[in-house]
Image (cartoon, rainbow, N blue to C red; front, side):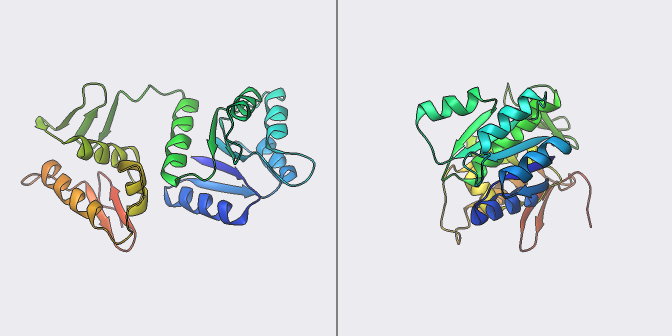
Length: 228
């Protein structure tokens, strides 16, 4: 997806843009309201990540309201340190589609961005995911590889779902820890590697073509075909 990040805090902007790019997205960044407004109005984006409080005389909510009045329907995720219920309501009423308070885990931001992107694409509600001959039915929680039924533990199912949703993208161990385990582990832990190994044993039984690749010094990638 093509994503616009409007964020004046250099550290937060670097954290978000780098993470989104590592997840395979194309990202533009604006560090003030004027440039953010110009980019959002002049370029087609799949999702906009908008900081609420921006320097200058135009803040995030003013940008969102102006875009909506102009007929721009791009999904917008608001980032804000203001976590009161009234503030969230105000953000959503201004035209925002989702509201995430700071500080936040990158895994949650990525999941929300992906959800907004799926909603805007007009696709189905993700009843099933498929990579090669591996298929996951999200309603029945049934996983098959060709004609073979694969039995997974809840954590393995969640891990496989994340890998399949990000097929052909490199996902880091940190991203997997945040998305699958819901909180941060010691960065030296091998819990991800252990679960990936067990998952591979189940989905790549006997002579079936490998689908999960280890990307050295980066993480993992699920893909149907070998990639250079």
